[in-house]
Length: 214
Image (tube, rainbow, N blue to C red):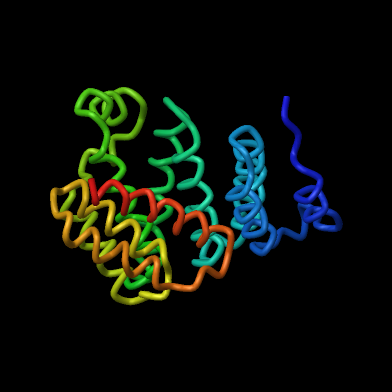
């Protein structure tokens, strides 16, 4: 079985369960981006535990709730089957709680758009199983229109974030608007990568660009 890499273990030294910090969650998220598949799952499991610990007793914190939503979103992208649906469904719950208090939260709007798009990309059979049998009933209402509205909002309010452009490009590609997709990919490549996650976004953008040229 894979073990959490030494660099991640080092991040946790000196941080006890009675002193949870969102900074630790974000450090684990960054580490997960660079990890291989086995390590990524283990790191994200630890990140989820930490995120839940930071939220316990401070449920009104938008920052802490958003950190948990991000981790759940990454787990939904990494896991399969019921674990994937569970993570996506709870991510939706966390985002709804954030947006009820702060409707203009850019990060939450972006994640909500990604969630809607992800559900719509499922095959009809997979979507039916996910929403009717695996506990993802809230995901039934996912639409391309809601995905675009939320992703475009995030891209408009925070155009400096590469993933805001990439996710909008993917939506345009999947809804048969290649010219708009190409425009968003150009925006991604024009931005300076400031993190490992940005580099991963740019690598995916390059692959999408190649697809659009075929």
